[in-house]
Image 1 (cartoon, rainbow, N blue to C red):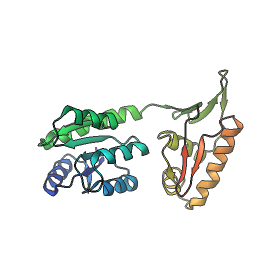
Image 2 (cartoon, rainbow, N blue to C red; image 1 turned 45 degrees about the horizontal axis):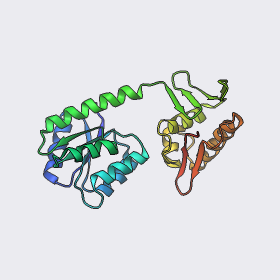
Image 3 (cartoon, one colour; image 1 turned 120 degrees about the vertical axis):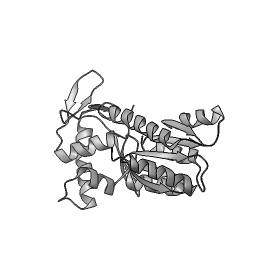
Image 4 (tube, rainbow, N blue to C red; image 1 turned 180 degrees about the horizontal axis):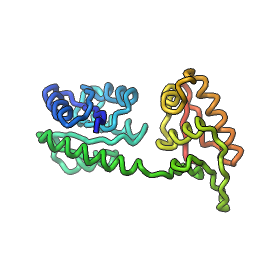
Length: 230
């Protein structure tokens, strides 16, 4: 798969074993020994999946999971030594995709990881994204705004504007930095972050012209986010 797995585990021996098993199966890995480093690496590296221990220094696994879920839907496999069903339910309630209980078999962790990634990839194959009354068709490369009376107004977007709108729509409510948007959506020739501001301004103007007001928000000190407006 060559997916990037973020292993968040403060016990070095366990982390090393997981790294070895993942590497043997063709995965790439990166390791964090506490919750704060895990959040930093999640933001910087955008891993495909996180194996997240519950008992961690600085920020525990539940707190880290909640912070991750406020950002996006990165798949998370919780690893815990706790056997109480309430602890498992808490992990799932906060947003974990699955859990394993220590001591676990590393082969089971890899197998569960593959299953979660397959589900995640299947879900990501959806070609229609809806945020409020904005509808984005990834296959047709088209975006429309749906009015209350059922009319559909097409947005006349450039390729870069469409990429920006679709990228933010995939994780609505998440705040994206200008650097993230630049790397993900703009061609290599446009290498300045202030170029993002110009494109975002155009997208906002076209949304508002189609009566989709308030969807694109600036986030002070960070960048932008797309929010569903009801």
